[in-house]
Image 1: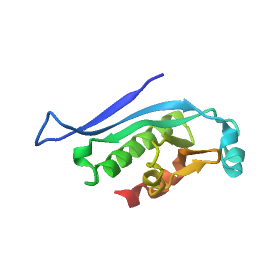
Image 2: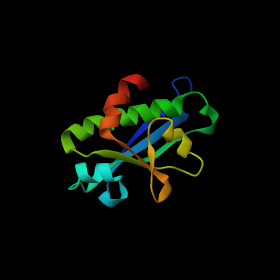
Image 3: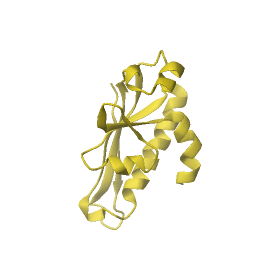
Length: 130
């Protein structure tokens, strides 16, 4: 399975990494999605995964997490046009769920730290996030 990592460096201090994210695909159990999505995507077996997304503590609170997330969602949106997956999933660290919920992610019914957003929702809102 391919894993792609993207790094945001500090141009003023190149030895510092502001943050990074990692993208890959992940198997999904369609039964974990809401009934409406289960019906629409009954044959789906995988989704995009933001496997890691982090910002160095020196740069927290400066909007870099949002920038990294939007960049990741743009890349996954483009990938979905080729690979055709309906959802993007993230396994949030404890306490980070609210960050993803601000951008339209919804928690899976049995896992608060595992969230998803549909490609349709990303497509509809990506212009608002710019």
